[in-house]
Length: 314
Image (tube, helix red, strand yellow):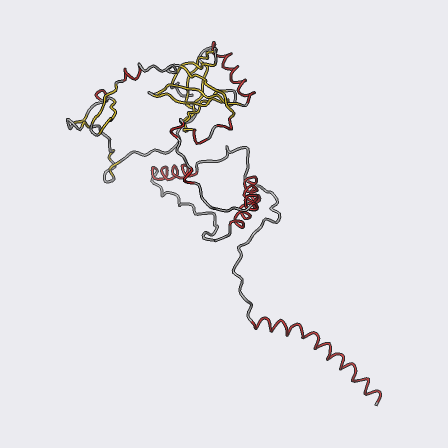
């Protein structure tokens, strides 16, 4: 595990649990340096003071807030540290809510493991973890960190408390104006969409990989070894640009999803419906002639059978 990023305590009623905050994720993205393309020299970012037109060191840089155009107010680190925040060294649990009541859009993407700090934290830590797991609820808490107070969600994963940073209400934009208006969708289309959802449902997403990163790493490895980069992969062979109506597209999607899972697709197979065109008149005439041909042959056979009978009677 990486080094702790924060240490303090969980405040759970009158129970206090000393904990350390450890990052729950790691960035596996491929990062590039900026270089001068002509000679591959590194391009550095240097910090300059506009007033003195010179480069300044990190020790000379502070914080300033723009209260009006070209008017800044300096805020020192000591002033920030002296802020009256009761959650400066504590994760204060303020409520417990059903997990389904938390809108995922509130999740900021930052997740952390909470590690019990010392033997004294072991029993209360295990107590709250087991209580949350049995109650199927999550805790909402406040935490002051990096110069601001944050709202966090606490839940249990494999017996370990996990903290997810949440956004405040005023940080969530209203999406009402983005919703499609005056669009009619039939019940059969909704039912088919639900069937597609069911056919694509899984309990495990651990098998998915970052194929773009893998391809990028292969390109970098090949260039570092002086080899030609691998050829880019093309699509899966499906033709694009086909226009299907919504219902047909849903049914075809259900068929493919069921086929991928090895299930019987039943009668879900749908083909694109071409425009109906009138049959040429010649084909219709040929059909009529073909239908009359057997009757004509039968008449000829009957006449031939009657001729010998007339010869015997002569």
